[in-house]
Length: 135
Image 1 (cartoon, helix red, strand yellow):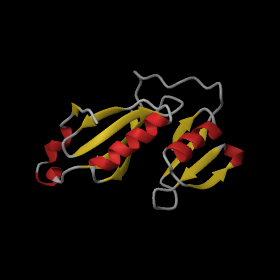
Image 2 (tube, rainbow, N blue to C red):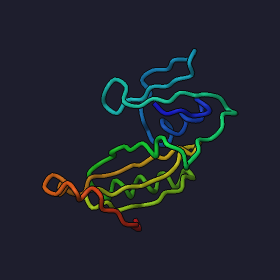
Image 3 (tube, rainbow, N blue to C red):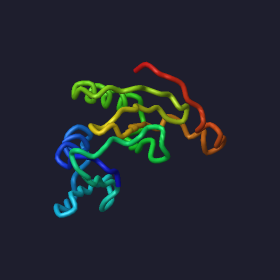
Image 4 (cartoon, helix red, strand yellow):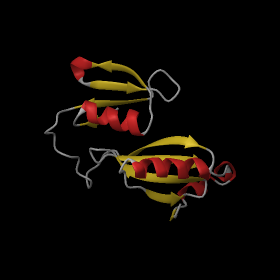
């Protein structure tokens, strides 16, 4: 569950831009539940339009990550869709995966990634690799 300021705006982002299906809403608590193939894999809770932004230097969640596929073409298509929606992305090659990093309307970090290798199964340290990438 991710805290956001505005339920409708967050739904427009996570459902409208990222395409996560909404499976339920809890209006009395301003919560929305999304599915990634299970009953509810991700949720948002609105805490108010005037809530302060999270302190980037404080302990807490850095970003949420969503696997969107297994090939670079899928990631390139996602980047094009995000850019068309006005979302700025940063591409990173992790070796075992390639990722796009961006922010939701409240500044919460989001990662969309595709798997590129199963090297991590033989060499677990491979997940620590990271370099900027141009898509």
